[in-house]
Image (tube, rainbow, N blue to C red; front, side):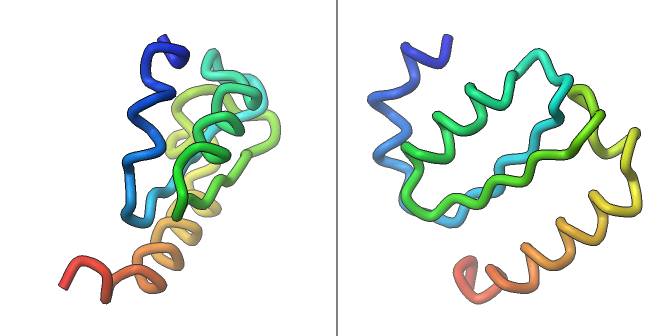
Amino acid sequence: SLHDALPILKHINIPTLIISGTNDLCTPLVAKTMHDNIKHSTWQLFPNCRHMVFAEATDKYIQLLQSWLKQNESVSR
């Protein structure tokens, strides 16, 4: 559960992209809690989407992912 993982999240020190949908079983509260506890995270909430955002909002998902990867590509080098 998220509560079990909370102590670990603060140790993540690399850019992290959190993606969730408003209708996701991983509720916006869970995603926001992850975002609040991971230092260098970005969170994008997709309206009217469930867990498989990439299948429900494909174009917006790809645009977000490409932009985020471009912004963070130097971190992995």
